Length: 113
Length: 112
Image 1 (tube, helix red, strand yellow):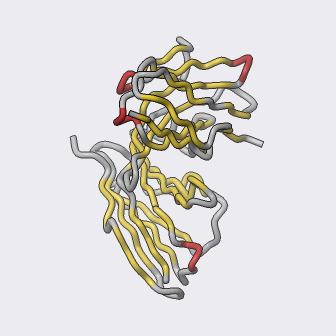
Image 2 (cartoon, one colour; image 1 turned 90 degrees about the vertical axis):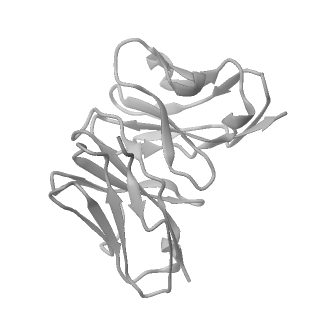
């Protein structure tokens, strides 16, 4: 069974631009969560989607948004990029809405110049 | 506040030596606990998990962890470390949903 895939793997953007990252979960998994990883703040939860509905949201500004499609694939969008948005963005998929282990993708490395 | 603490930022062990990475959590009930490993430039790989039942759990790559409710701890152990175990290790928990709260990580260096 294929693992979690994320595209693109690397991105370079400039301040003020917007970016869309994509995540394809493991086949059959209905939950997708997003995390931001930075050296200063560590791993922080962004949001979770289950069956196309946002179930949970972390403490990030409204510039960070996401959605999930009927095939469970998910996208996250960051608008008006800031230098501090430079990070590794990790996607995790899980079979259900809770009580299950989560499997992570390789991440998308976003650099904002 | 709900949190996970990994007291050791860096640990260096010799190959073949035993390893214990510490993890303490703060949560009002019994959490779901996890250990993940991350190699440079990679995503997170699940080593093991504790949901309920036997407090000593076995994971992949020869790792095990013990849940101790009285100490709010979930320490990761390996009897004999291999050079390929050098990586960063994260302890995490949830209250039952999918929102993981992570510790700050422990960077493991293995000396040959």
